[in-house]
Image 1 (cartoon, rainbow, N blue to C red):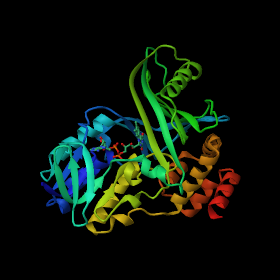
Image 2 (cartoon, helix red, strand yellow):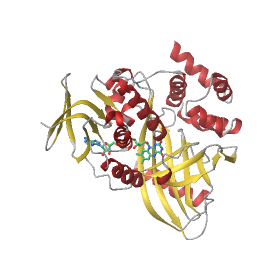
Image 3 (cartoon, protein in one colour):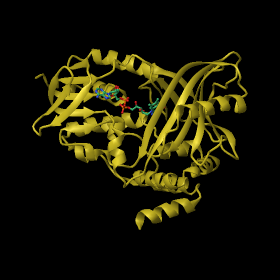
Image 4 (cartoon, rainbow, N blue to C red):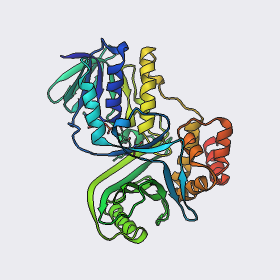
Length: 380
Ligand SMILES: Cc1cc2nc3c(=O)[nH]c(=O)nc-3n(C[C@H](O)[C@H](O)[C@H](O)COP(=O)(O)OP(=O)(O)OC[C@H]3O[C@@H](n4cnc5c(N)ncnc54)[C@H](O)[C@@H]3O)c2cc1C
């Protein structure tokens, strides 16, 4: 039975970031590491966007960057410069190629394309069964996400950021490629939180996503009809070619994912709760959490204690409670934020980097009633 110090299950965002961080750190040079994925990761299956400032870790694979964003609501339609932040895009395939190349240079890390069928923690070691092999390891990092576990509990609402996106090309120059449309709420809400997300890659190419923050997914046609209608009615675009399509549903929940960890098995990425509950953004959070995980590994801290409930966890919980019971309120909440506060404060708050005074400033932009109701319901 081949034995390793660490096995990483999943060579997606979290698995590859973890493998690279372990591989380049001399502290782990004597650790044997196996990276497993059922997929060869040779397709562009997603596009990641995130905001950040003063960081060039991903510079070589950033495919597009915007220095301003647009927010459209029922009463506002405004473009905001976002300095010192930039909004950045990384294509999945560029990320996979770049990280697989880095990992191939680390002698102590080996990648195998095999599907994991079973994981068993025998306390002293963990066995990982695939169709061809059974491997053992001291520690497992698992990024396989199973939503049914999260949905089983009733303590925390489980919404999803779900969407279908098309990359389209037009014959004419139509898009302002200096500005990313962060949220366009000018579309029918149909009792939910629904918005369009539009990322111009050039003047005649853009990624357009019909996105909801809600409990249940829609039929594929419903997202696609909404995109077609937006292109025609809102952007006046009749002739276009669809170049790529993507689809996703990202969990939005304050559920304690570390409940699924054991002393030897740590869940990472979406499966580890690295997604920001109130937005579905995961990319930047994953880079932060992987660094924290490395620190914890060096300090030999328990995997069960990785998850922390802080004030931001509670703010997210209140927003999710509101959106679960009154899903249509999303538009007015986000519109109040963008009307009354700068994107700089909004990004800082969503990055969980604001102090108490900044929290008060942020929260006071919102109509208090839904939040007080949600607070009352939680407390009593
Ligand atoms: C289409 C899409 C677009 C997104 N866009 C953004 C964005 O713009 N910004 C943002 O912050 N977040 C975004 N997200 C959310 C989040 O960043 C991604 O889902 C991210 O890939 C999560 O990383 P992960 O490592 O947890 O999972 P993944 O990247 O999905 O990796 C999990 C890996 O596990 C492998 N796997 C699964 N089961 C097995 C098994 N049994 N055996 C072996 N391997 C297995 C899979 O093949 C996969 O490679 C997006 C998500 C999707 C789906």
